[in-house]
Amino acid sequence: MAIVAGALAAKSGNGGHAWSRVSIALGLRRLGFAVVFIEELAGATTSERDYFERVCAQFQIDGSLVDRKLSYELVARADAADLLLNIGGHLTCSELKRGPRVKVYLDDDPGYTQLWLQARLLDGRLDGHDFFFTFGENIGLPGCALPVDGITWRPLRPPVVLDHWSPGGQLSEGFRTVASWRGGYGRVEADGHRYGQKAHEFRRFVDMPLLTGHRYEIALKIDRGDASDEELLRSRGWQLTDPTVVAAAPDDFRAYVQGSRAEFSVAQGIYVETRCAWFSDRTTRFLASGKPAVVQDTGFSSHLPTGEGLLAFTTVDEAVDATNAVERDYKAHSAAARGIAEKHFDSDKVLGRMLEEVGL
Image (cartoon, rainbow, N blue to C red; front, side, top):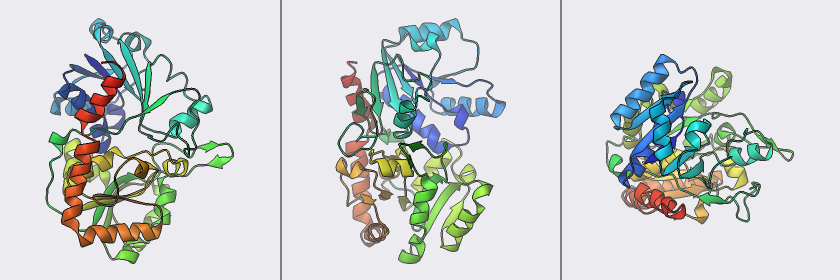
């Protein structure tokens, strides 16, 4: 049995986030585990509970939303589990955390995790784990500007369950992505440097529609306080749509991705500046759907094949060249995109290697 712990109800209305959690649970189930998904959320609202239950029911996941009271049955199941996969240290309940035989911490926010840990802001969330995996493939390697604080960070790529992401679908024009203008956290400062957010990176590439003549669309979560940025994007030719309309549920998100022609996106400034080699789980789903991805390089180009299907950029000129290349030979880039997903992000391979490393 495996316990997967992470936020789902707390991110209700975010279909892409739901896929990031569901994919791990489904991937472990494919490898033979009975999976229990646990979310700790004090004071969950009715809508949050409904979202949690709908998603778990859709994928036939055994889910438990823990508020304050623990059931004896849930504690017993945790005690009997072979594996705890604790996404972002979400599970803090000692009665549930201590039981599983192997405890794995998964860092899905590289950069934030390491800098918060250095600043002693994580309240012991990493304590009690046996292994530490991260979506930042460069962490601990030369050239990555992140502290490790004595932790052996093992690289893990975002897994995608390929059966749920078949290639094809009706093609829109141009490029799409789903994004939050500022993400879930504020800017992080460390050693006198203040790291940027996605907003700061998008501003660098705001003229892409004018420079290429291609269509660029973002399902964008943006606050009213950033109205000037929204106006800037629209004035440069970006098409903006509401993610709560087109990507709120897992099926909505999948339809939006599979209805696209290709992806274009930047990354959070902290991922770019630290060269941690973070790679987006969202992008893995574009690739698996046979959609070429033109995405800002965070250092991942040192580990993944780029140039066909997956195109990395660091400058505006490189971004222009990459999007033009996709449009020139779309069929080849589409086939290559699916091939990259199959070789590098298939949940069977990604999670299978993780299980080997932890002795399961």
